Length: 272
Length: 167
Image (tube, rainbow over all chains, first blue to last red; front, side, top):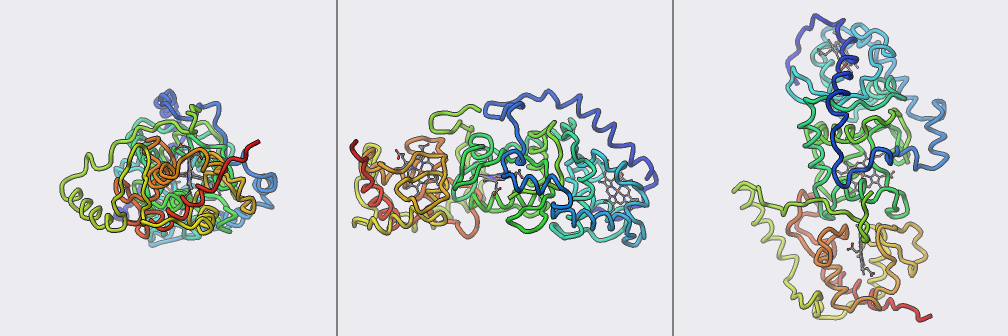
């Protein structure tokens, strides 16, 4: 994390999303598919292949357990934190406006840190830099709650294609996605590009899209981040996980968002 | 999707180690040398391993239990097996194992389990008796084959009993 710094142009924060999104639509929208990529019109969300009961849970906020995390997130949004004594709301005012569409275009390249940040990384950056508070550890309840609350403001919106300055990160993510790893010598692509829809030990392999995160997973009995999901798949491959928050996970997230560009955000979703 | 008959397309795969810098390569070869202790040499003759890895025949009953166990054999993650009806959660990424003993000679079955990549370089079926050429293996599995020589002989002995029922 960088040292805490005071930032003056706070009010500009809310005007960033629109222009960033406009640039990306021009740049990467036409990035070519490669052999083996899922054709755009055949893509489907994990939602589409899950059982009726699980879908009903996601469809109804009062039945979706992730709503508890959303409520926590909403409360934390207005809670003053850190040496600066500022709440998210002090700078970003109403999340429904300021955070609309933001999660749909992350990970994004942060020029100040000269590295890509996913949405968790971005929130932690505001904690350290703007609130002068400690960063929250990954999978920490408050970080999940804030991330779910921010991502909720993009629900129903299309995932934006990443801008040009993210291309190297997307490429790095693709390389990891296509690399065979672990004792089972499998790649992510062998399951999620080549064999989606087929059954692995009785349950359908989804295409592996990131559009619902953070989400409530019945198996976890909790909300969890996209990185936690990726770690689960690596464990399944009997591969060494990356450290949570590592550049490799951010690159995978960026590639998955590129792969899912145009699909609708569902956060916080429910998955089996 | 572009599915080949085996259900896979080829993702280009560089042989491991091509770009590894010197020190890492040295460490990797030391690790491989240690790993070799767990994987004894075997001879491949015409797409088959004719001789038992242990010098003894395996036990088909133990082999069935290994195949049926999704955490040990892992076979049912991918394969269906109509001859193991009590296991509900089976895969459909790979052929039904019923009749495997009619389709393949015992030495071919042994090579298939030991190193399925010999039959199809792009297969998703893992090599069960191999520790080299892998990347980022989880620390609790590093240097170990998925199954031991004894377990493989048990599995092979079981598969050999799976005969196609003549109609």
